[in-house]
Image: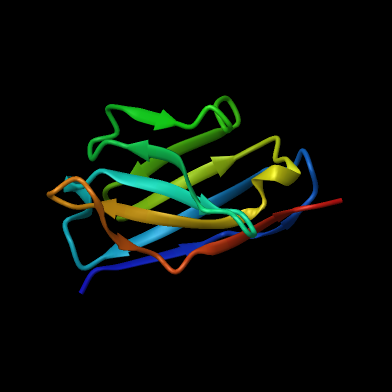
Amino acid sequence: QVQLVESGGGLVQPGDSLRLSCAASGFTFSSHYMSWVRQAPGKGLEWVSSIYSDSSNTYCADSVKGRFTISRDNVKNTLYLQMSSLKSEDTAVYYCAKKGVFGSYDYWGQGTQVTVSS
């Protein structure tokens, strides 16, 4: 069965860096568009960044542009999110999500908490 397992979250100070990972299994990872989505306390889901199956294109939200970088390793079946210059407003649960054949996200991980606080 499809599994997405995020890791790498934690408590960091403003300005710090952090790298999130999402280990994928149960499907052909290299064939699928993948994304990171976050949910801040008391708020709805916010799309963060996406990457094509072959890494040929990446996209990110304006709120993280220039600070976050999405990447993937199709040999290790792992999605990454490198986060730098973290701000308090980046505090959220971060989820990786797989885009299905009909265009919507059909599988999500359990999430990893990122807390940015001094």
